[in-house]
Length: 205
Image 1: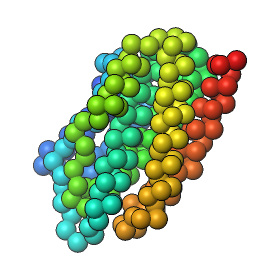
Image 2 (image 1 turned 90 degrees about the vertical axis):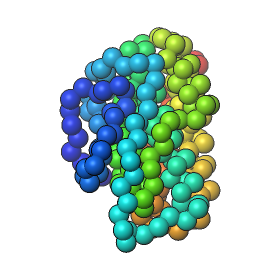
Image 3 (image 1 turned 180 degrees about the vertical axis):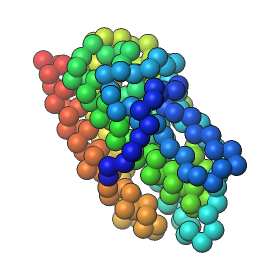
Image 4 (image 1 turned 90 degrees about the horizontal axis):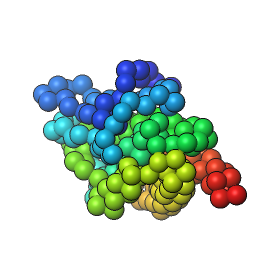
């Protein structure tokens, strides 16, 4: 899964995707140095661009579309939440966790965007109200409060929900590329959850 990523500073937490009339697939910028995060607003989401329909690239079933949409929202939220860490955390462990989540979910989002656009599906324009509430909360947290809430709400709870959802839906997916994408990313989410559980135990102690 090694890919080359731009190393310039992150813009508005999650890099804007704006292709306009271009046919090149968008890339979400990943910060390969999680200890240095550019200043960002309280939250940010991936900015959608018009869908590029690739004829003959296959079609999504209704289940595929629901899964891709839900997975995209989760990635957008977890990328934005993790990119706050440079300004909000007081813990090196939390910074490491946030850096891993940021990198892996950005890579996942890049790959998902390619699949979605090839099936003529637009990227979500905004996160859900509950996800926005989470981002707003984390945006006002600093130090221990951010560490506790980020690990509990993003590292543990969000990843438990993601893993359960992926496991429940993977057998129902009709699109082979989407199914392979889910299978590739499930072990990474389990890795994030394991690390978050370990940190959570130390924070609570």
